[in-house]
Amino acid sequence: MVNQPLVSVIALCYNHERFLKEALDSVLAQTYPAVEIILVDDASLDASVAIAQDFLQTNVSPYLVKTIFLPDNLGNCAAFNRGLALASGKYIIDFATDDIMLPQRIEQQVAYFEGLPEDYGVVFTEAKYIDMSGQHLWYHYRDRLKHIRPIPTGDVYADVLARYFISPPTMIVRKGVLDELGGYDEQLAYEDFDFWIRSARNWKYAYLDKCTTQVRKHATSMSAQQYHPGDPQLRSTYLVCQKALKLNQNESEQQALATRLKYEIRRAFRSSNHREVILLFTLLRQLNRSSPIYWLVQKLSSLAIPLPKLGHTYFRK
Image (cartoon, rainbow, N blue to C red; front, side, top):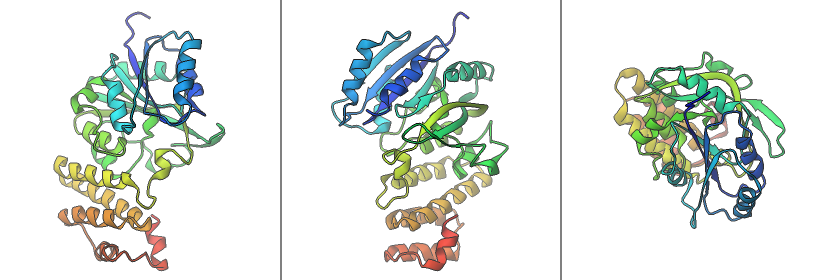
C-alpha cells in the first residue's frame, strides 16, 4: 500500500534497562511499514543509555530512528514534549519502554483511524497486563472493567472526567490534537488525566476492540505510586480538576466532576494525603455537591486524623 500515513512512536525510557531491548524489538517487529521511532531517555540512572546505544549500533532498523539523551531528568510530560518536537507523523504513540507492542498494533490502529471522521482524535484498545517477567495478569476490559460496558466512545468528555476507563498505553493520537494542546502540561506529575480532559473537550474518541499492547505492572511504575502518602500525582489531579471546572459546559459535566472529586477525596484520605483532601474538597464545595460525610472528612484531614476503622468500608469504593 502506498502513501501510508507516518506514525511517530515516542519511546520514553527512564531506568528501563531490564525491559528496554524487548520494548524496542516490539516496535521493530511491527507489520506497519511507515514508522519513525523517537527514543527519549530521561536521564536514566541505570544502564538504559548504554543498552539503547548498543541496540542502535547492532540493529538495522527498517524505520527512521531519532534519539534524545537528556542530561537531566525532566519528568514524563516534559520528556515526551521533547520527543514530540521531533515528530513528523500524522499519528503519535506515547510508548513507555517497559511495555510491549503486539506486532499488528500500529497496522490495526491506523487502518481503523483512517476510516473515522476527521473529528476523531484518539483511538484506544484492549490491553493485556503483565508482570516483571512477562506473565499474564489480567485484561483491561474483559477481566476487570465489565461494569463499564458498553465502552464510551465519541464524545467522552464527561466519561473521562468521571472515571478512569482507558488504558493510556494503548492510545494512538492524531498529531493535530497534541499540536492544538501544546503537548503535555509540563507542570503536572503525570499526563493522561489532563490529556483526556483537554483533548476530549474538542475531539472524539474511538475504541478498537483488539488487544494491541502488553502493559507492564511493576513496583517502580508511575501507576504503582498512586495514592501512596506524599504522592505528587494527587496534586496534579487537583490541578486538572480545576481546569475541568472551567471547561465544563452543562449540568451533566458538573455532576461528572463531582463524581471524580468524591472518588479522589476518598482515595486521598485513605492514603493520608490530607492536604489534597482539603484542596479537592474546596472544588466539591464550589460545585455545591458536598455532603456531611465529605465535610467531616475534610475536617479530619485538617487535623491529620486518620480514618476510623468503621469508615474504611465506605472509603474503599
